[in-house]
Image (cartoon, rainbow, N blue to C red; front, top):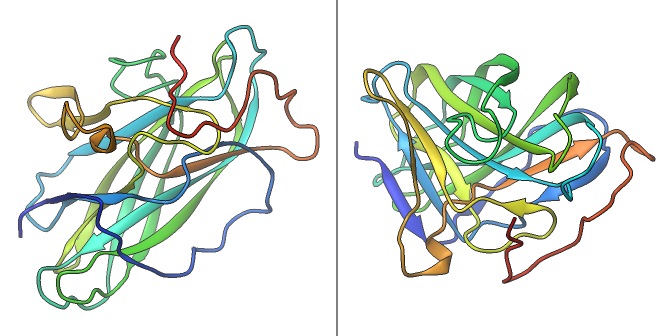
Length: 231
């Protein structure tokens, strides 16, 4: 099974996995414009993919964060039955590679065991969400960079698995153009899906929350559509 990267194809959306109580959203990509499913049964152990963004204005105090909701996807060229995998997750100070914004330092790590990977219709992605609670995690302040990495263990699924992708748009907060990949034996690298089409930017779907109400003085935040804030 080869990894799949598709931009501009809408998949079947199923219900979100229940998570912690809702807080104040400070980063939200908005809905997917495509998907990227690089994990399958042949993926080398230890392979990681990640992404990052920021929600500060440059002079902000460190902020407590409570949860990160990831927009995930599965795909099968043929109809694929439901499966499971363990998701190895880290939350980082900026991109986990350290090659974009932030140090890349790990602020929190956990393994989500026996996560259900949904069944798929032949040739159509299925979208779902997983909410990861972030207990007692603080950003570094400043631009409040954040990011994550995700790997898989005990992969028991006949299709491919990965991420919903938003492209060059955000509802709230600021995205980075590149996502990142850790390849065992080679280390970290960064990538995007194409240099010419803004929709090909690697901007994985995610939502970040802080405590509510009043968990963060929201300064310098705002919804953006086609324009990316630069720093």
